[in-house]
Image 1 (cartoon, rainbow, N blue to C red):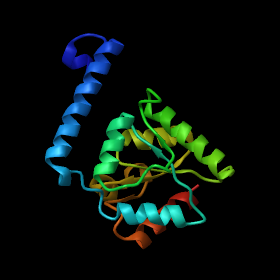
Image 2 (image 1 turned 180 degrees about the vertical axis):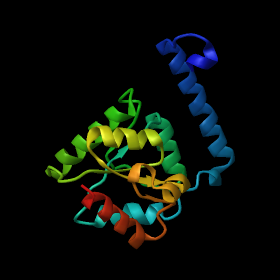
Image 3 (image 1 turned 180 degrees about the horizontal axis):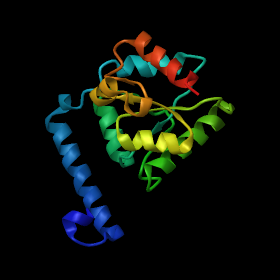
Length: 173
C-alpha cells in the first residue's frame, strides 16, 4: 500500500483498502463460486487432523479474518470450531502464529512437545524457524527444492505421504 499510495498508510487508508478488497472478493465469489477450490486433499487432511489423537491443529493466516472466512466458506470448510487467528487480530502473521499455538495449548490442555507449521511462503518458513517450530512446506516450490533442508508436499492428496513427512519433520530435531 505504501508503494501504491506513495505515503505511509493511515489506519483509515488501510480500512478503505480492506473494505474494497472484501467487496471485490465477495463479488467475485458470488459470480464465480467454483473459483475458490481447496488444495487437493485438504478436506481429508483436516478431517485426519481433527480425528487423530496425536495431533491438534490451529490456523494462522496473513489474511484479514473476514476474507479468510469467505475463502474457507467458498472452499466448503466448516471452520466454526477451529482455532483461527488472522492479521485482523494481529498485525504480523508471526504474532497470529504465536496466538494460535497458545490457544491450541489452552484448548487441549497440552504443552506440545513439538510444533509443526505447514506453510506456503518463505516468510512462513522464516517465522517457523524464528519461533523454534518445525516446518513442512506446501506447494510446488517446497516439494521440489527442499528449501533450507525442509521437506515439502505439493498438496494433501496422499495422506500417508503427508503424515510421513510430518513425522520426519517432527523427528528432525
